Image (cartoon, rainbow, N blue to C red; front, side, top):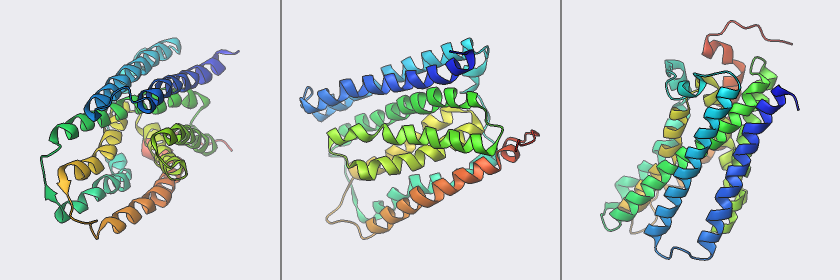
Length: 270
């Protein structure tokens, strides 16, 4: 195996192994009711994701050193975010904020405040673990293959988003509908991959992922509703439009205008 192939395959293989380890622990833990109380289950999930996310970062450090990029890992948490990228994130900001439109229809409650707090920490851990694995490790391998042509950029974000989406298929064991969750996470995964390709900032990806998962929980845990809010259908439909239209369109836009966004002067190869 050539050195280039190793740089591509090893990080992606490590990501897939960590994913398998996660589900090998998580699925039996839930199905066999190892932790009957929700608080303890959420806490166990939190620690599992923190541990596996940290392992992913340790592996990332190793892969960057092996490729001769000593400062590469540190730059994942220090790269500046340009105003252009902030504009590109506009659909995601709307996507994140949409669930909050339900709040005026509800009544604030602290009945499950403790459960919400541990669930919020769980979502932060989810962003930490999944981004370390699916953006950090997977993209570390994919970006070796080059990003200097439109074709390769599109291939990169499609593969990254596809792996991220398919990684949620085992959630069928937790009662999730894979026909809904897999395509949805695939679309947002493609978008996150395109943004990460532009910024190289893993910390940004982790924060955005955590916020995306967190806002629906804010509404679900901290507000009571006598009946389903009338605006729920609008929120659901709007998020679907962003998922299946805005995210892929914006991802293609990023791939096409990548050099302008990054301010590079490389000439595209035919």
